Length: 398
Picture 1 (cartoon, rainbow, N blue to C red):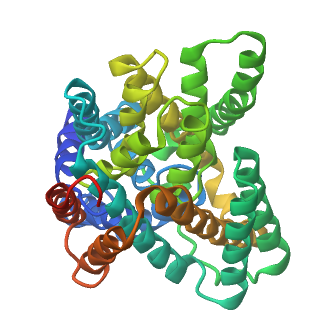
Picture 2: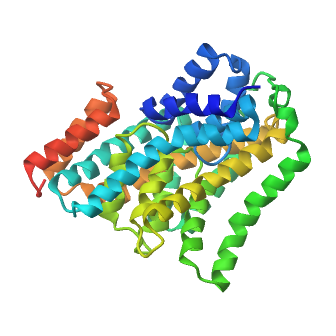
């Protein structure tokens, strides 16, 4: 057993230095926690990665939480999340404050953040399609999901896409090769989480997911509505990372809480900071209208989008060894993963492309940013800064 403060110190350093998105984060975590500190071995690390990929929510953040809990109990998990998440959340809140305080929403350089978002999301679609939809059946699922999401652009449509992907995967897709029989339940430290505790936490996850909309139907509270919107996004997004974009956009833009331009500007800025992309929720909570916004809104949004991860991850651990052996579950996961590729492809067109690309100059800048990211492997934060500078130099009509 280690100290929660030790976990906070290590996770905080990762939160300040982990650029590159969720896949890169897994590499940072492996180097720090497995190779350097030996808090767990390769087999245990791989098994936890599999678990976090199965659950909805941010896989890299969930992995950090799991390792923190393994090292220092429940408090270690909380401190691992704080250390990894707070630096990027504070940076995005500061960005939101500067936009509002200095009235920069219409600044020419800000449009560069929208344009670079096209390149970032396109790169994510490309990478996810190669790994999650590499064959004809799964590519077909992805394209069908994109088409359905475009013609049915609502939260209900997105849930239908995910459910249909799971059904198609369970019924039609072949099972992946069986995995090695590593056992999460035998990892030292997990024995403190009993099945009774796990069942209570899973029940709490579903109680909040289904109960908060019912409460809002009877008693309207803007604070609860804000928390619920981000809780729903954190509970229903599979694939993590950039896939949260369409769910968050549907949660805050159609209601008029955040303008589409401010949404995409913040999303672009999120590419320039280290740590998890889900910290984008703090930016949105800060800028929403009406109140609560500012620091309180940021705290509500950030806690809402991450709470499902805490409940599900901790709740599922006592049952994971049995669940992971079910062939139907592995097939469903394949279908869901292909469907989320389609959701991200649809989001690339709307709202990202339709909001950012106004003419040939925009397209040229987006292609240049994509080349820097995909071909030359330039760090995303450098590409974001370069795009904003280019937009500022070229003027407001870029």
